[in-house]
Image 1 (cartoon, rainbow, N blue to C red):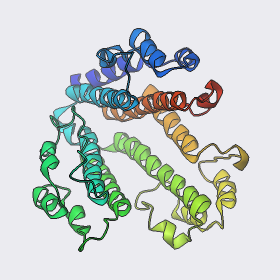
Image 2 (cartoon, helix red, strand yellow; image 1 turned 120 degrees about the vertical axis):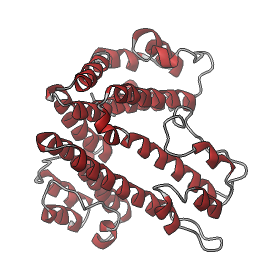
Image 3 (cartoon, rainbow, N blue to C red; image 1 turned 90 degrees about the horizontal axis):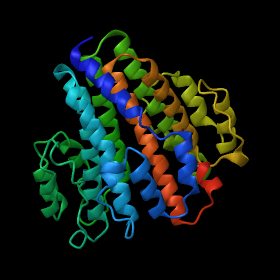
Length: 344
């Protein structure tokens, strides 16, 4: 194993060694204000440096969540710093995912009729690493100008596809799906061209599982909340990459309603059984599967790319846990109810 690969492993495991423990969550759940949560995170956890400048007397929830997102990004950058130069295309995929999020936010502003009065929120930490000048988006006031600005980027063809006619609204849901398809295609192609053997197989297992779980979440939601027909559901899924047979996925899509879907899911390769009366929300169960798979790989793999990918999934889950706690406190939820949403 190369020196750089060893360095990624060592750094990721060092950072994971400072993760929030069950005892940490117990303490956080005892707090009854966001100020108290911040005070604890500052003094008792590895979040101290990123929260250092935050005044506990005047905390804005959005500002706190932005700092947590920044910490997530900075941890990825720390690992990329040690990554082998020949593998950089793989390690840069996270930048592309964040650029897509910024572009979607920009396009949604066009739909809101408040383009001139609303400023695009560009994370301050991202432009330094982005593949195009993100700040240039701030002065763009219409879709044709956006297309001209993005003409030389990888994002142009999808943006061009959704060029609005007259004053029609842009279908940002389908645009987001197209961007996601393109991102996953790039991810799979990058893994296949950069890695071989077991390393490639494990990375593909991780990303295919993530895609499948997103599909499962969508199928359930479409059946429970919209009573959508199978052909409508299929258009919203990414079915190009899968570990489970297409026939099994088709059976899930063809179920008559959400209740039958849950029963069928219990006998699928995921063997996920949840009583419909206890179904808090589908993401909890799919996220738990992804988290446990990532955690297992992270603990036992000796491959730098796999440790990088799985560590970030595990840490992203930790950040989501903190956001659930913050959100719960904002709405005055009891600790027991907030605890039901946490995965660790």
